[in-house]
Image 1 (cartoon, rainbow, N blue to C red):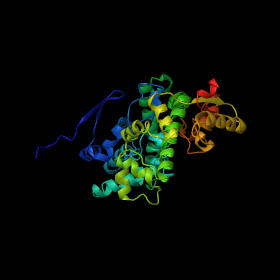
Image 2 (cartoon, rainbow, N blue to C red):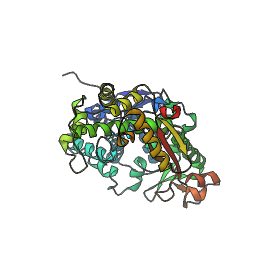
Image 3 (tube, rainbow, N blue to C red):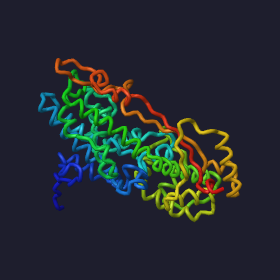
Image 4 (cartoon, rainbow, N blue to C red):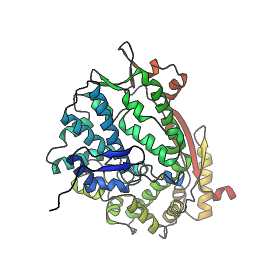
Length: 411
C-alpha cells in the first residue's frame, strides 16, 4: 500500500495557504460525507443575482477551521489554557458544523425534510462519524452541543462573533463582489480573550466589531435577503412542495433515487434513522438541479412553469412593501392568473403569494458580545460603544413582499 501524506495544504483565495493540522482532520475531510459539501452551494441561488457566488460549503468549512487555528493560537499566546485534546475537538467541531446542510444550503431547509434544522442533521452526522472513528469525536460533539463546561469553546463555534460568521461574511463578500460585507477577521481574532471561561473582545477591537456588525447587516440586505435571491429560493421550495403534492396523488416523477425517497416520504427528526442519514448524504445540488431540468417537461403546468423560471432566470415579479400585503389584492391576482392559465385557485397560490423578511445584525437579548475594558470589567458592546448606529443595529427590521407572475403586469 502506498503511504499517503496527510499533512496537506489548501490554497484558499481568501486566506492563502491553509494547513491540515493532523491526520484525523485529514481523514474527516476525505470522508464522503464531508466531500459532499463540495456539491452544496454556500449561498443557495444567490448566483442568479451575483454570478460569482458559486462557492461551496466545503470552502466555508475549511476556512472556518483555518480561523479556529488562528483563534486557538491567539488565546494560547494570551495564557488561556487549551489542551491538545480540546484544541483538536475545536477543529473538528467547526469543520463539521455545517455538514448537515441539504441541497442549496438554507434554500431547501424544511423542504427536503419536515421541520428539521441543518444543525440537528449535523449532530446526526457527527454521532455517526464518531462511531466510525472509534469515539475520537466525542469531545467535539460535547462542545458543539454546549455540554462541555468551558463555555468559550462553544462561543468560538456558535455565537454572535464566532468563526462561522467571520468566515462566511468575508468569503461571501469576496465571491459575490459585495464589498460592504468585507471584514477584518485577523484583527477581530487578535482581539479575542477569555475571562471566567467566557469569550470576550478587548476594548481596542471595538471599532472592528462595529464594522463587523454593520457588514453583517449590509450583507443580509444586499445578498442573503436580496429580493431576487428571495423569490428564487421561494420558487425552489415551491417546486419541492409541488413535487411532493404530485407524488402523494400517485403521479410519477423522474429524478434520482435519493431525492425521490425524500419526496415520497415524510421525514421528521423522530424517524431520521441511520438509513435515512445515508440517503441524505447522497443528496446535493446536482440531484435537485437535474430533477428541475427533467421536470421542466412534466405535464403538470405548475411544476414545469416553476422549473423553467429557475432554469431560465425568468422569475416571478417581487414587490417590496412597508406593510403586510393586502389579502384582497392577493386574491384578486390569484383569481386573475388562474383564469389566464386555466388552473385552480389553489394551484395559482404557487405563483401568487406574500411573505416577510427580518434582519437583526445584533441581538441584545441573546448572548451578548462582551467587551473587556481597560479596567478589567466586562460590558455589553451596546453599552460600551459610542456609536448610536450600533443601538439601531440591535433593532429587528421587518420588510414585507408580494410575488406574482409578470404576465399580470401586462393584463
